Image 1 (tube, one colour):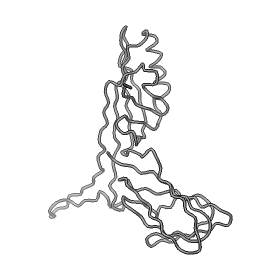
Image 2 (tube, helix red, strand yellow):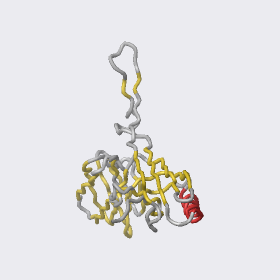
Image 3 (cartoon, rainbow, N blue to C red):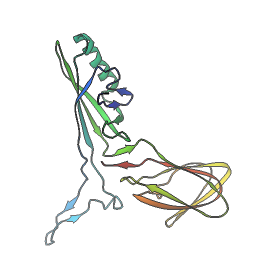
Length: 223
């Protein structure tokens, strides 16, 4: 049976079987609340999402792990710790948590040696992470436009609202995208369209013209 492990960037803590993941904790993110007391009013005013178009915003979450090893000599363990520090410490990277195989975290890592005696060594790995668990796979929609208008439903099963990347391709491509009250004529190129904010659920996009459109985005959840 394979031991539980973390994947920190390209470093797999169980790649050579010499580290044991002895402890692992991931805190829940807290939403960023902003309440303002007003004299004479029953209860405070809630300004938590006034500047975010109704979307809650969250603080960082902390990942803490303990890696232990009794394999090899004391010097071999010290060399192994040095590899950890020089490879990971201070860098921001994607982190694969064993309990969330379909998602990954993104955070900045710190490595601290706890001890390395004649028989045993331990290090603590901490990471200050984004609040989100990002989907390993992106959603991808590829469509071909014609003169007549067509409909496309963009699904977001995640919690985080996301702006997709839109790539228009084709000789003399000219595609009209319409969503909500917005209509945009797009030629060949790559676009990030802030007005095309995909919240949880389905967003209807209408398109017509010539060329192809490829729409990609990554969903994310809190748990």
